[in-house]
Image (cartoon, rainbow, N blue to C red; front, side, top):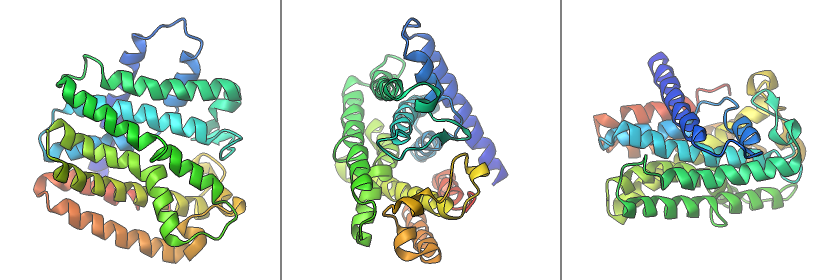
Length: 294
């Protein structure tokens, strides 16, 4: 696991290096650059970027291409966190041990900074720095747009808010969490198949692995929220329980939700192992999800 953490940190460092380079080419007179950077460079393991890199290793995708696609995904992830913390959403004052963007600046600035990070992701994917065919770039942008919009992340967030303090079935909770968290992970895996010009069947097989990784990640987050230490997590814990959030921990109980997560992980492992020995780093990524502070 030590070697994996070392590699994870390396990937995060290189992803941030590219993001800082890309920001250096932006209009420095923009008033939104500072809050954008605050929300983007607020810590975090850049785990989604590593999922892209480790999926890319299976198919011998150039490391730099994976880094650039990963940078775009991290912009979208940061946009979602900035918006998620807003009072009209989950209303969190802290993120990773620091003031949330809307607390550091104000609500309208945070919303606009988040929106700007979303569009920056598209700018990254369409840039000349990503040396792939324009057709592939278009496919990447189309795919990630679907993952982020009303049928993906945004739609999942809508259900997350509307399900509060209601009795929601396991099936609906899973569907909501796949949209809210799984879709972006789905893109992380599918993006490699797009770059390699795989057919839709092969693309969907990789996307399904990513969707399940995202679901596992969300369940692990919910387990951490239920039993985690707020000082380690970097924000208040047990908020999901207090707010009556619809998740598997609140529905099934902590230990049954943990068993659900372990069974899901076994399924993901089986699917990844079909890709042979080059899939070892992706397997380690999945293993890491349930070894965080539960």
